Image 1 (cartoon, rainbow, N blue to C red):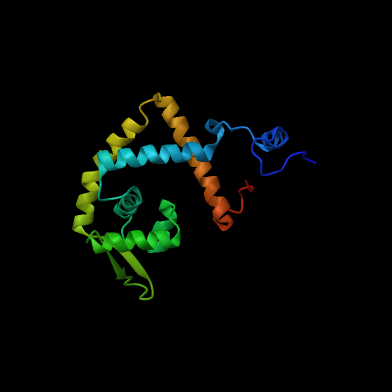
Image 2: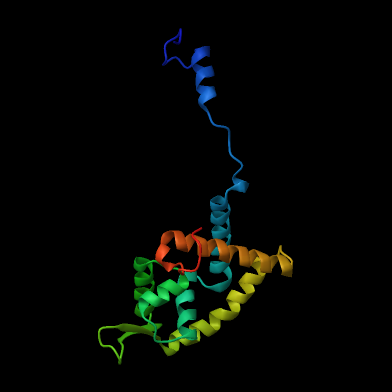
Length: 178
């Protein structure tokens, strides 16, 4: 029991008791989420400075996927680039509004819509591809070639595991749970 009024900030016992409840500051350099956020901030800065102020990284990922395999449905493209259903829908809507892709009925299955790059979308992808390569060089410049390879492998592994946490059905039956 405190001998002073609880509202009195000058009370020694009250201050001492509050300080004992305070958790010390954490070293956020050991927190992957904090580091991932900082990496994302740096990536966004480099992207808008070097690659494009008008096309986002997720939008480019969609264009890039369709350059590799045109005529995929929206769900498949979203899965390949790691975007959830609502985000891929918005990205596709914006790209279509800019005339960079078309959403058309599949000739083989009229119930299914597929995405096709327009000539403008293909040309934009070509222009931005070189810029993304340059941005990645700058982004990874602090690392040696071996470190870059290891860093990307580790990021991919953590990203894959995070995707499996979000969608356990995405894991193949042969893989153990994380």
